[in-house]
Amino acid sequence: MKTIVLNEPGKFSMTDTPEPAQPGPGEALIKIHRVGICGTDLHAFRGKQPFFNYPRILGHELGVEVVAVGAGVSNVKTGDKCCVQPYLTCGKCIACRRGRTNCCTSLQCLGVHTDGGMREYIVLPVQYLHTSAKMTLEQLALVETLCIGAHAVTRTKVEPQEHVLVIGAGPIGLSVMVFAKSAGAKVMVLDVAPNRLEFCKTQMQVDHAINAKDGDPLEALKKITDGDLCTAVFDATGNKESMCKAFQFASNGARVTYVGLGQFDVSFFDPDFHRKEITLNASRNATAADFKHVMAQIESGKVNTTPWITHRTANTEMIPQFEGWLDPANGCIKAMVAWA
Image (cartoon, rainbow, N blue to C red; front, side, top):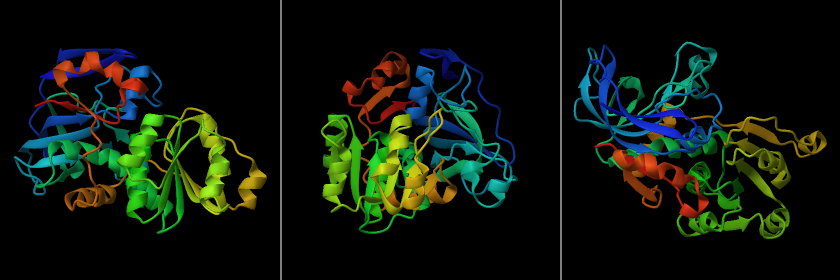
């Protein structure tokens, strides 16, 4: 079967690999139809993705179809269209036992720690498949990205009418904006890319879009909030300087949540941290409950997926186009690769 492999940073190859065996008990053989390109994939291509080894088959944002099921499977059937919860967990560790499967001690994410979906077929345990009779294959491939934001917003307990700042207007930041808006918050975004800020205003309907290069963003936020600053701050950049500075935008009693990930130490001035009694959260991945929530929001029309996909291509055309998606001038929010 056709398979795209990232052999080393900057070097893909299209190759043939053996088709998987028939599914065993509790498993399903799924056909890959759509693969969304994530920041993780872009970082891996650059050689800057933490916890990553080469060669690797990328792909964890998947819209798929069930083509066969193993013994004892009742929750999915042949022909079902599904999204994939790509976090393979042990089910036994302290996190799993407490329902925190998103931070399982031995978690393996498809396309990151183990081979993912840039191939024609894959066998997975059916517990990681979420079916929908209403959503398109492209929508199904968007679910995982949206779940990252939904989980972060739930973890931060965003409330109606509070001032929420999202730092970073990439896909993860956008997913936070969607669900912060859904929670009724007044949402602001801080970024340095004019095209992304414009996208946030026109497509995400954020309340305020602030360019960090145009004056002092702290003063801008004080003006917007009548001096209060923000009661919830999300950093979705994975940038050290940005993550360290996030605390200055937080009001007294605020929550700061790191959604982005970087390979560095983060520091902050402890007296200010204590004086404001800030709560610091890390937000990692998502749970099955997040997947169900996001899918229900899309199916009901409360979440509009139309603006998200800015670039489309076939699997046979992906390799020469991939590097271009890294260029901010390309305006790529989400690229979608069709496999069938």
